[in-house]
Length: 231
Ligand SMILES: [Mg+2]
Image (cartoon, rainbow, N blue to C red; front, side):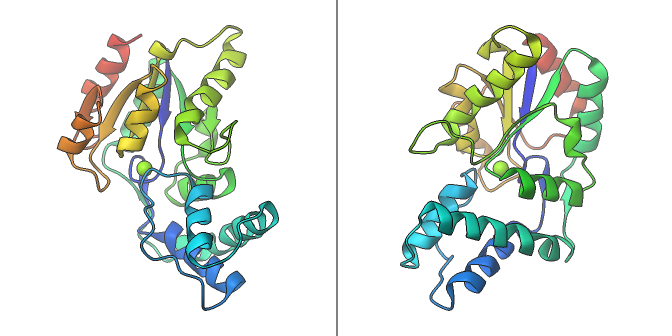
């Protein structure tokens, strides 16, 4: 079974470092007319968040511009992460160790972050990104328009390559904190565990169609039991 974790507000909180770094990067590159306010972030892909910021700032979002924005964001992020407020969310350390120890699960990441910034966030919270054997990042949608809904197939293809056979979506669980995480599982035939450690309520996560909704990830035995029951 493949267990795919979202990063922000599922595994960790960075106290808003990501958004501050992205905003500073935009202001540095595009000047005082750059506007990051009013954008929806939760559960969305970083390239789409950046395109929205550029659009409302009147900057054309060509590939070269996005690449510069991404590089500047990655350069700003360590400073913001160092301000403090970075930590793993309740239960995460124990859960990851238990899932690893169980021996029957492959741990992975499915996230809207870019690889370099997602890994920097995890390291700032003392989680080694190398523990996750399968990773699908925010810029890896195979088709346009980009969507999180395309990332499970990326993760499953990588998992299948490791297994030497096609991955069965019923043996893939996506754990995340927003309705976007839940939907990307549902539309791909994967299972989902939604966790209300972000800004989405348990009721809204249930309405989005999550198989299971949890307050946080602290009930290790229950979560590992659920994962085992789905293998
Ligand atoms: Mg999240």
